[in-house]
Length: 464
Picture 1 (tube, helix red, strand yellow):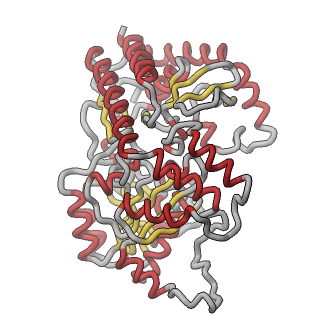
Picture 2 (cartoon, rainbow, N blue to C red):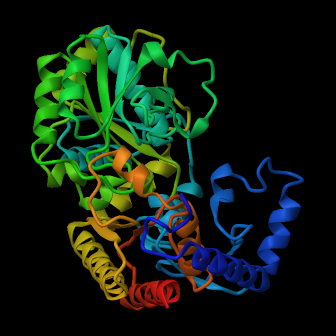
Picture 3 (cartoon, rainbow, N blue to C red):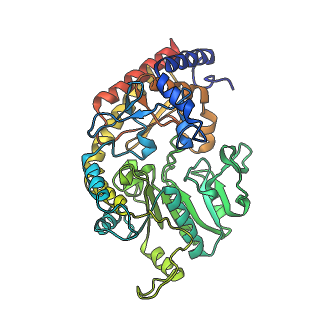
């Protein structure tokens, strides 16, 4: 299929605009391009993380420190200011430079950053996590990947079962069991063509489509699935909402078959203080939340319901503090729960991501989605804008997707790349992986208007 042919656009026009925008980026970002080319001498993919190469244009903008203060803005070495709607792919959902987080980090770092001991902030952070998400027992990790892996390991230990069920199109970090999807023929395959890592996906991974209750029931009926790992709303492959009754069926079937339900709120924490678990009234056995909860530090948390916590203690007993034991349990991380992380997390949970902050974030996201939708409608394009809390997604299809197969049919890689580059050249950052924008407590009305104006110019350029 030619680029743009299924999205109401002339594919030749798309290609012409791509060439124009590439030239514009090259002309206006010489220092970022030069630094990226030089960095290939040290970094495997030209940057400290391979994710950073995903920015369109030939090089990622190279950041410099901007004016101090709390904002949703970043600056680069070529003198450009960007309204940041990527926000570290959710890791910076608090915004940049919050003074309370900065003060807490400076205060703690000037004393003890990490000591393999709990700090005074630990009790309050545990209370705040329980209050927000409704699960009573928590453990910290250094990433959502680590937290998801811990939940899977414990689910296997508790249930005695080997397999993990995920939904096609999901992303749960570097979890081997989740690196699968359903191909066009309906059979399991490795997602994104990645290497199988000699992992026995056939024996340990199960995958069905989101919202497919019949397939879910058939797989769980075999009795060999330790847990279902899912987002409450799929966010990695476009935005895929649960169909009416899906979560109720998921919870009923997992309980009937003795399967644990693990909900990953790493992205969907944008929906409210308790994520979608709170807003949708979900009841997971285990819950993972990462990225945003420590104000930009690498951190995550996972919580367990009271029955699951008791089951974990049966397989990994609590012993007297006078009795030494191996506490490794197959997962860990010596920097998890560091004093520095806890200091930041306490401020985030108590002072930054408050109910009032979410009201502001949602209002800004609603204005952004409405403006984007008006531009699409005015241009007569068959596109959809959807929003879950502070997260907005543009999809090149008129219909809301039911699963990853629907999203795959509507994907337009060239058109999507053009959108990213067009906005980047006009001072707007969106997540480099798909057409997602995120607002934070200090996203300004002016920057929302900047995005709407740039997006409107984009669709006008496509359709003129």
